[in-house]
Image (tube, rainbow, N blue to C red; front, side):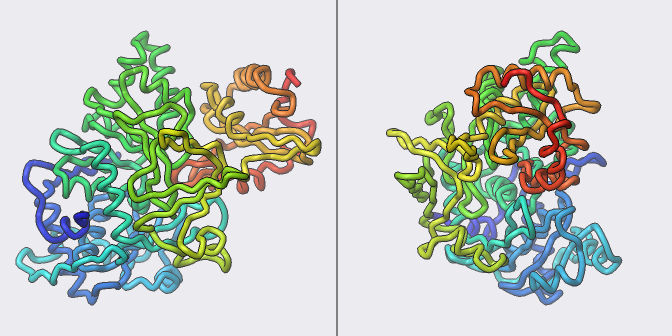
Length: 505
């Protein structure tokens, strides 16, 4: 198997394709050959600053051109990037010491750090600076230290191997054939390694790529008209509700409003990283915007993916070549082993964390339950800890109930708890302020009417403020942090006099 990483560091890409970085403050565009050249000059500059193969550089900044250049320059040196998510980490000397950083680049704090970040711009180093030798990577070599999104505690660090990156990119290219005419749109943080995959893909396979931020995503899509959008389910849920609201207001069809939002060149939509609702998936597919769900973890990278020609509703796709999914016959617990694992243990974690996640042979215990059908499609039923055991012994899987509640235009997220193991209580994040309490109450009764008695929600607590990353109630991939939400709303959950009570019991 060709190493994509070795290819993109050792030769420039062909002409005709570009990287665009779009923010609320404007757009920067650079051709891919110029991007390769600028990254080489930055690599020479970093080499002059003492950065050598195996050294670690930190990047703490929102998505920007400098982020891309630093990552590619590190690849050209054999250095290891550590991408830190703004808001989850602070640029301090403790951060540099804890993660053994040779340099830390950030736009967020001290004068010295800002000066270092300024040195990472293309104008800061001479054009004829000698280039250091380009490294050759083996499959087990590490290019980046990534961090789990983590719903509790300090994020765990995981060193990612070249082999895992190469195998994932080859598998994706085999399914979707990205190339001439494509523009892949990325808006999740570049500190998440998979978001950088699409830049590597552009350099190797010859297509455009646009990088934005979540805040500027809708603006950027209208401006760049991408062919592929990489997004988490929460993003598409928001887009679906936006399209529905706009259609009701303007009188235009949802089909027209979707194209006004995403542009008129969409080839397909990519989603994963969290469960996607069937309602949302059917909505976009019915508008001629096919959306393909997949499955993976930080510890496994991409495991399975629906794609054109191999798509089964309700599944997260066929298992990718080089990945092996093991299902425990008794519990349905899902484990994953890779021919080229991301790694076999955490680089930074609490004692016992690595042993709980990784088996001695490197197999990853995902914590999910599911099954594989006769055609090789993987189905994920939920988290093992999503199953609540009531005091009467009945087991209730809460994920389908939460998804049913999220079908309401008034509800963005729903997390179910079971105080006293007797009755279900939901904490919901509203889609608007002030929340539409009547609509939420009506949908609660509608949902309960479709459920068995033990599955019914007895009351709802409305989150105030709504769940958000800044409020520490969503992860960077927009998944609710259950333990944090329980901590914040414990009193309301347990107080029988507070909240919206169901009429259908």
